[in-house]
Each structure stands twice: as C-alpha cells, then as structure tokens.
Image 1 (tube, rainbow, N blue to C red):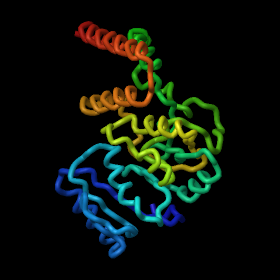
Image 2 (cartoon, rainbow, N blue to C red):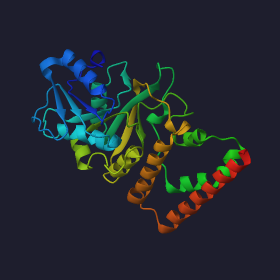
Image 3 (spheres, helix red, strand yellow):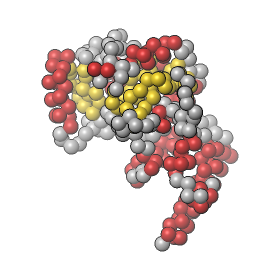
Image 4 (cartoon, one colour):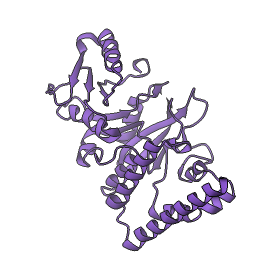
Length: 296
C-alpha cells in the first residue's frame, strides 16, 4: 500500500477474534519486522496513548462482526488529533495507484459529501466490482420480489440477477461521471471524515454482517449528506464475489437478522407495508417448499 500512497497516514489493524492460534502471531511478526518502534500491539480494553503510533494492531477477544469490529478500531483514533479522516478497508483490498490524497481532495470539493469511495475492480483488475455503487433497498422491492418468485423461477432468473437491479454502474453507459452520487458504497473501501462518523455514532453495533452501508446511508440522509464514488480512482477488491450467489446458512441467517433490524429501525415503514412484507415472506417460504417437492 505504501508504494501507492503519498498521504500521511496511520494504520489501525483489527484482528476480529481469530481462533486459529496462528494469525495474530504472524501479523505481529510482520508488523514488528517492518515498522519496529513505530508499531504497537494492544489488546482489547487496554489503554492506549492519545497519539497513536504509525501502526496499531488491536487484538479483539471475540468476533463481534463487521460493525463492532470496525468500531473497536475507530475508537482508538478518537483522541488522536492527527487523524481527521478514516479509510475503512477490508483486508482484501489491493492498492494499484495513489488514491487516498485524491479522495481527500475530492471529498473537500463536494460540500455535501459524507463518504467517498474509489471504483473497485475485481480479481486482477479485469472487471468492475459492481457492488461499489448500489441503490438502497426499500420494503416495496422486497415485497415485489417475494411475490414474483414463481415468475423469476419460470424465467430462470437467479437471485443474483434480481440483485443486479440495485447496481448503479451495471449496464450504465460510459463514461461515468467523475464524482457520481450513490446511495450505498462498498464497506470494503470508503473514506469518511472522523467527526462526521462520530456524529452519526459510527457503525450501528446491532448488526453482525450486512446492511451496514444501508444504515449509514439512512443516518447520513437525515443530515442531508450524500455518498459519492470517484470513478477515476481505482483499487482492486480481491474478494469481490457477491455472497448472494451461494450464501452459507450462517451468512444467510446473519443477513436476515440484519435486514429485519434495518427495516424496523431505519425505514419507518407503515404497519400495512410491514404486514404485506410478512405475507410476502410467508408466500416465498411456501413457494420454496413446493419447489423442493417438485425437484424431488
């Protein structure tokens, strides 16, 4: 990353409760070798100085999910006046050009900008990770898709094809706008001003996985702030393979729990719409059951 960066930065690395007995030691060894006295290893709830070293490695005692894991790292930066922005990064982001300083400049040039992200590429940079610019999902969309499940099945339309309807860049004619307003950025790489994030309470700790970006969008919308993608700045998302293609049971359950929480807490849907959502989900479950019988 350092070879593709000209901005003054500090790293906060969070190990989110690894249980393999190897990862923490390997990371600590690597950071010690590369940063020496500029690096510090801290455990959860351990006091740290007001001004962080160049690299801080926080070892969490448990895996509390994406939101809480990030919040633990963000909390370490709260008192450090040398840090005024946060670049939230997953460990599968690969830098291929200098993007941090240009993102900061772009963010300052857009008065209503809360979060700004680069264009994410997949794999070796062969294509675009379409998840980097999405529309929010409303209750009406879930209701429609649930009731239309038999039609989608007859048309051999996959879950991923339905999901593609929310992708803002997918099938959009190029050239893209340089700074394009979007609703949902990718949580794998996004820049936000620290004071803005603190004002909205950082990530909502009630979710374990999924809908974090939806919640951020709703929080920021109330403050008349927008999210943008800088389409001229790029990095690679090595893990850019949407989980909805083949979700595991645990991932599916986490997504469902987060969706229910998001709907009930942030969408302010009228009772009749929530009732319709319940009916549509019962209809979908019946259809899935009947479809399994047909396959047998």
